[in-house]
Length: 566
Image 1: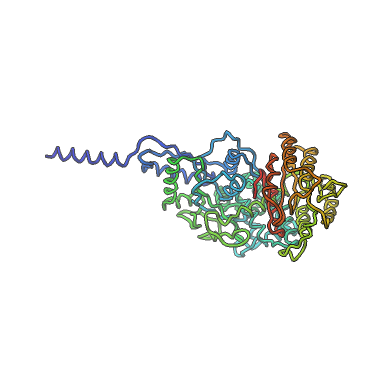
Image 2: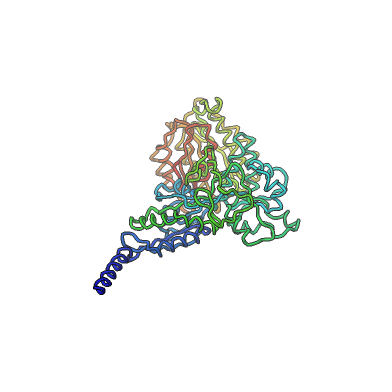
């Protein structure tokens, strides 16, 4: 009887082990931002040790720390697009099954350029507020830790005097830099004076920009020597985790973290399952995310200087002096507080901010071509009754002020019969802003509608494309920026079929030209405009149904690298 009992117990135990065990292997690859990778790997190891499986098949998780910009470039290349500021990731790059970038802004930027990029899940698994990092002696001079500052205070210090040397990690390559750029932009207002102030602040940031976060961190002072403090970077938007990691190395000059208003979008670490992943790996990814929602993960995040998705902290979190126990909700650029995984981000505002940055920091050549047909005399109610032409002149003036001296710009106008039967007229050829800024600024006053003029769109688009191609320069983005409020109405001009055929014929991969068309008001035909840009190698159509929004649409167009049809 004893032997029977022992054998029965052994069989029951075997059955329980067999039911809870697994066989085979599902390999799940995870690319995580470098700072969160150790916590994710620890949680994944615990999950697999506890018997991670999908329908009885074991799951093996391989977590790799990767800079989000590297993965973003690879994803973009796979979809045949590119992002402003990023090099090519190479179409042969192997993408992970799961991507944990440091910010949802990467997902939004990719979606705005590549409609086929539709990852699933996307829920936040961690958070790190974006702060302004200052050497503690400098921070004390501006009232830290007792005084609460705003971004407007920082902008004022950046644009008046030379006491504050600002830096930023290139916002096209760094999510914390982008969040700081968004917060700065939303703090200065929208009138002409505010825009000028913003341009000054952006130029100050650009002067101290770095391509890599580690490079920027090296620019902070290494000693309390007065000369070192005066010559080093004294303020830069970084993540709270950056400040924690920097101070953990026990530098002679520690960094203070200033939590400014309005609160920038935090780094929110979205858990994104890649579109190409099959159902089995998708199920494994779901299991991993559930493991990352366990209470123990909050403490693992705290150990690497990160917060839980709701902004609270786990045991052992060594936050900077003055750090809140729970980070406040970010203010979405353009208004409205949002606490969702997307961290209050909006693709349009991201593109506008990056458009401003690109105009200031990236070298380029652009031929700006303005519609002066009779319909440009129509009034814009949302602009106080100003004409479409007046609104366009204002946008052109603001855009020209934004462009850095590294740019070269030309101005054309078009309607019908401006020079004999020719519908377009050159006002200023593409010229370096270093020597022609005043002339170009004066040329804007010539964007005056021809009262009974029609729209010679097709001939003008072709001539402008050929002009930029003929004067093409390497190492720059060579673009046509064409503004129009109507459809082609030129009986003496070429047909749409002829235009498309010619654009395809003259294309030269060695001399690429971006054809960007900005439609103004309700009279444009998106299909007509997209037919034109689709015939070129790159470019896009951007519509401003409300002409008063031309400036915003213009910035979105500048930031697009690969033809978003937004």
